[in-house]
Length: 133
Ligand SMILES: [Zn+2]
Image (cartoon, rainbow, N blue to C red; front, side, top):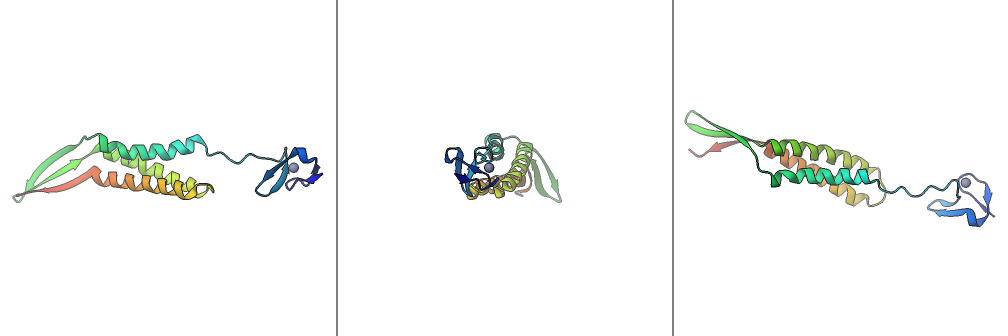
């Protein structure tokens, strides 16, 4: 007979399952939490969103001149929208990655990358550039 480390009852060895914390009975046994697909998709869709502006080039620009110096304002709504999505998704992914134990470093790295990508896109969503005089 083996004592379950969870409920402290005795069971036949055939009913026991080996876990990180010791042997537990069938009833107490909980399979290791499989990384949920939605969490994975969350991390990767954020990353994908951050990459979209690289493929879709669309921008509004308006130029004006002031005191003989020309400048142009370029607004890229695609970079703005997808950059924001990537930033938010990356932030959420960092939070969930920090609370996981397996493959944590890799998940955090992907999440941080997603955030940085989002920031990068947001920085390019609005640009005010000087036009050569
Ligand atoms: Zn038990």
